[in-house]
Length: 119
Image (tube, rainbow, N blue to C red; front, side, top):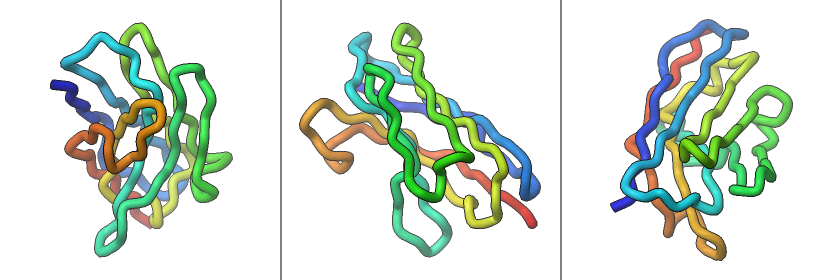
């Protein structure tokens, strides 16, 4: 069974940085697209960033220019470097993975890691 585990969340002041990591277990296969979503308190889960196994990134407008997603296909990991953090970036961040042709709802999700940005 494929599982994803996030790490690296925490609390930081506005303007600071955090790096989230996601590790895949239960398979040696390289998943087509890995990404990050977040859910703010009382809000809906929203897309943040993703990257294909070929290295093509995709960012939400809110993340563009501040966040950088990367993957290591040999280690089967995906990281999210978050810089210039804002209080509105606060939320639970989820790692997710999906195969070619499927949507995020049909993919695999981690349990989430809390990110808190204080003003």
